[in-house]
Amino acid sequence: MIISVTSLKGGVGKSTIAQNIAVCLAHMGYKVCIVDADTNQSSLRWSTFRDEDLPGVAVFGIPDGKMLSSNVKHLNDDYEIVVIDGTPSLSKVTSKILLLGDLIIVPILPSGLDIWATEQFIERYEDAKDQKERDIPAYFILNQYSGSINLNKEVKEVLADLDIKTLKHSLKSRVAYKQAVIEGLGVYEYKDNKAKDEIIQVTNEIKDLITNL
Ligand SMILES: Nc1ncnc2c1ncn2[C@@H]1O[C@H](COP(=O)(O)OP(=O)(O)O)[C@@H](O)[C@H]1O
Ligand SMILES: [Mg+2]
Image (cartoon, rainbow, N blue to C red; front, side):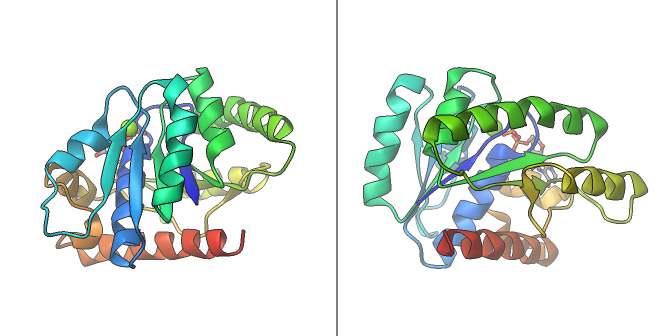
């Protein structure tokens, strides 16, 4: 099972979400790995801080688009779940990541600029579906979202009209995400219980989606 976390924008939370759902899935008993497809190698670096006694999340850095498909397919034989931490570019790599995913997760920040970027992303996604000749289940996930801010609520309404659905659960802006990453942890393993609860909810929602594929 391949979960692609991708977007056309940088800084939206791809690496944060890839790491945190992978850690959560590892605690749920899945054999899981991350493929870090970004040249900045954030997840690869994160893994070097990770304590060996924690549930294992192997990270493979594959920033070379040419190697990506074959390597991911092999890893998919060895691991129950492969989470791809995608690149923020408009390059062919993004199309490959879309084609590889059994499920696509697209982090989005609740701002107008990010909503405008979805148009281009949806075009890329539609092209990938045509190429694959079948549907590719894809969901936005609102990151750094707060339901108490009116603008954020409006963003949710705009997303509801798009071809890509939005996950029911979202992530708030929390220091825990920034702190956990430099300790090689997921927030599941960190002392902020609210962050832990929200990542469990998101991961369970994703788990339900993949079991129904
Ligand atoms: N929910 C969140 N709460 C707080 N900080 C976050 C959250 N999600 C991401 N960040 C921070 O935002 C920045 C960009 O996130 P990152 O995961 O690196 O995005 P991307 O991989 O899409 O470029 C990082 O500094 C990260 O720690
Ligand atoms: Mg990243």
